[in-house]
Length: 347
Image 1: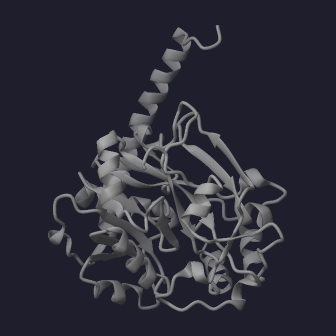
Image 2: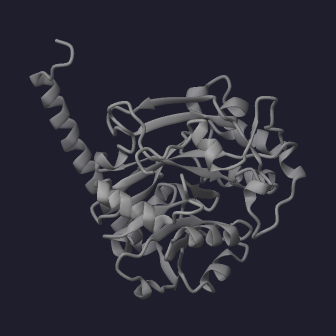
Image 3: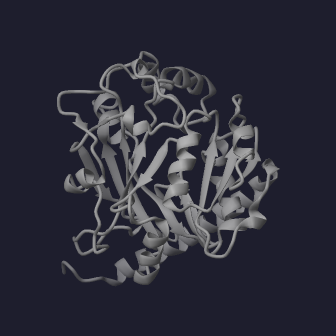
């Protein structure tokens, strides 16, 4: 009967749980093997104190974004940053090595074959993240959440601890300029949201993945402009960037999902609203056309590079993502009113 759990359902769930346990162990083994690809450039992790909030990121040629990225997340309450530099040809590694709250490792190995950097970060999280609240971000992601301007991360993580919640979800929100992508130059250290002032407010599709129980969200300007004929093949926008880490945990696909599955339940299963944030995605700075041409040639950012060739070609043509239904960003309260983030019961 509908609503009742049958013996077959129980057996299927037990089989899935067993398979996912072994998947998690394989991911942890991958990270252990990939540790040999990392070379310490500047290791300051001995300075990490109990209770410190950590941020992990794999970067390549992000010198223009990192000054604001560091300033913003320091102001939020990140105590220490752990970076893997994947063969930068600008001064990314040197700049990060000079920061007293940053530890830096380098590798020239394949980003794609390390699960897009996740294997490297998993090893660092095993070594240094256990017992800490850990942010895992790309350099083009800026975390905001309700009251972030007055309540720093320790207030949020203390509340999550009090509620017994091990993770915190966020929607990745693509920002873009009014005109062509290269027409609005950005200066390092400035808030990129002052350059990329626009976003799509309401064209999102959402479903709950049955196996990992994470939310699969698609939409925004990339789905609208580059995947209009096949919107289900557009990038997924739901992420779980903040987790109270345990050395037995592992991300499965970037930060879109993790194991064990309970980490993915960052939503109210009863149909209400759970507290969640937004990752302001600053991919579309004026450097995007040049970087897209380079990344298409490298073929390191997508497992199915053929599928994304047209996507990269369109980016190198310097498109206009703005449209008459675009919305100008004014702040987190606007995003909450639009239903793109929620305070839930965090008042």
